[in-house]
Amino acid sequence: MDCDLTTSSGYVSDTSKSQMMEERANLMHMMKLSIKVLLQSALSLGRSLDADHAPLQQFFVVMEHCLKHGLKVKKSFIGQNKSFFGPLELVEKLCPEASDIATSVRNLPELKTAVGRGRAWLYLALMQKKLADYLKVLIDNKHLLSEFYEPEALMMEEEGTVIVGLLVGLNVLDANLCLKGEDLDSQVGVIDFSLYLKDVQDLDSGREHERITDVLDQKNYVEELNRHLSCTVGDLQTKIEGLEKTNSKLQEELSAATDRICSLQEEQKQLREQNELIRERSEKSVEITKQDTKVELETYKQTRQGLDEMYSDVWKQLKEEKKARLELEKELELQIGMKTEMEIAMKLLEKDTHEKQDTLVALRQQLEEVKSINLHMFHKVQNAENSLQQKNEAISSFEGKTNQVMSSMKQMEERLQQAERARQGAEDRSHKLQQELSGRVSALQIQLSQLRDQCSSLEKELKSEKEQRQTLQKELQHERDTSCLLQTELQQVEGLKKELRELQDEKAELQKVCEEQEQALQEMGLHLSQSKLKMEDIKEVNKALKGHTWLKDDEATYCKQCEKEFSISRRKHHCRNCGHIFCNTCSSNELALPSYPKPVRVCDSCHTLLLQRCSSTAS
Image: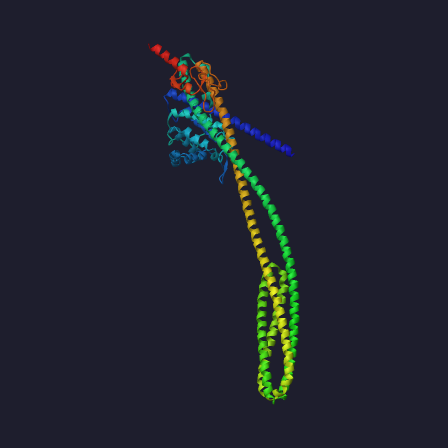
């Protein structure tokens, strides 16, 4: 079923195209006949026409049919609109000389429809003798006419250019048309074929002379058309050369663009491979850093456990010291009489307490440094992984323990103040306790030396931890640098992708331009083929008029006189006397022949012969 539908739709489109081609051909022939009859009647009347002239009315009717052929129907709220005044309004934009016609047509109060305005525009353009020029401007800008006409319309095809060439002959006419009294809106455009039908029986022998004059006028008109067509052919050849050059340039640009695209694709592949390698390396480095951080966390936990054990031992010693202090206070209350011995003992105790205070201050400073270092490392490790929250909890417990130590130290200071107060009451008993305190002081000194050794070992461990943390900071900075490099490379890859997209867009645009130029070349080839056919028809007419043999363009490949081959720069030219083909240098002379009232192109040999004949007849 789908195949049947497609075949039926293709058949319908082919039939519609064939109908449009037939309509174009018929309209072109009718235009030729109407222009021919109009010129004949104008010659008989003295080249001055009025609005009541029947061939002129029929010419406008045929022109209206040509402009309406293939018009697109514009839908609106009122209904469907199909008028040819829309494309005629474009002439005002393309050619500023036509602005006077457009303004005068719009200012006419009798015209109420677009059809009437279009007819008035045609009247005024004919009176100005610029109808062919204005329509040529429209046909040269077919991209603007595509909004109003179908692709197979007469104005969009080569028949439009042919009609414009036919309209050039109307510039000879003088038309005096009055637009005020006529009703252009309600006129019915019907073609009257009776004007173009000839009756052989009505021809008399007395009108043969008129026929001969008509034939001569038609011949002159054909010559003018021939000149116009030769000029258009030359313009088309120059355009074809320019298009060939532009096409070659575009092909070179396309080849360069394709090479550049291939190189960019290869670079993209290399960059992708490099990105994959970088990603693998980054993943490996991240895994290694994770393993290192885990090991460092385990070592940190072990060191924390050792510190906790050390702090527990210190707490035990402080408790023992508290018990000893309590015992000393009891003994001091009992031995008040021994003041001198207690003063010496208290001096020693004061020295010991000062030393302990110094050691405690040093320990506090070390603890504060440990706190700051732990906090700094906590912030860095927290950005690297969320798993380091355990470390924060350990630090918080450590801070609680240090706070407890601080509170205990404050309690010790308060007790020392109480001891100093009780010292005054225990001076009497100090003398008796000197001997007993000497042994205890030696034991305390031994304990202080042990504490100092433990502090030195703790300082060494803290230094090792600091070094490990510095190495971790360096590794983190290295990872950050590598991540920044990866980000910059990713940005470069994105920029390359954008360039690739832009190059693809440029390639698509160049392909579109090439397709358009190929279509233009095809259209130019069709136009050239049609113009060649028309030239051959004109040559056949000239053969009948002259009686000389007229060589075809394909038969001659070199100049008959200089025997040089023809090319794009060396063009072919016919001699109007002998009919042979010569180059421009060998046929640059012009003379008035009996069959041509105006001077035409003649070869050098015919030029000399004709001059000799003229001189002989004159003598």
